Image (tube, rainbow, N blue to C red; front, side, top):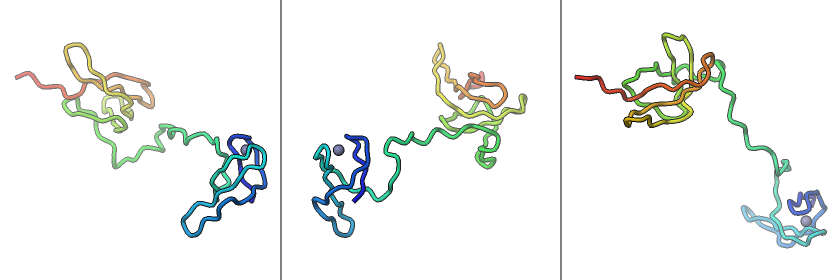
Length: 125
Ligand SMILES: [Zn+2]
């Protein structure tokens, strides 16, 4: 069976060491390094890059999930905001604590770039 060996970094025709049945794994032996490895049904590049974080663009925004920015509210990393006065969309990339224990969020806006905004601001009574 043809299988990729991550040690030798090459494909080899491998001998079956233990045939798995049903959901069990079939084990193969690499003819070069003699390593035992599980037979993978998917012949994908083993060192494929992990799916890069989807580019943040207007097209990628789920309009139903957009929240209008309000400094009194609290946000989580990944939340998508709409800033009315800038007419710009941004995604929360980081939560920050500012001096004075004020909470803030770093937001990556489509047009403005990275901007720190206050959150959870309490109105003075
Ligand atoms: Zn090998």
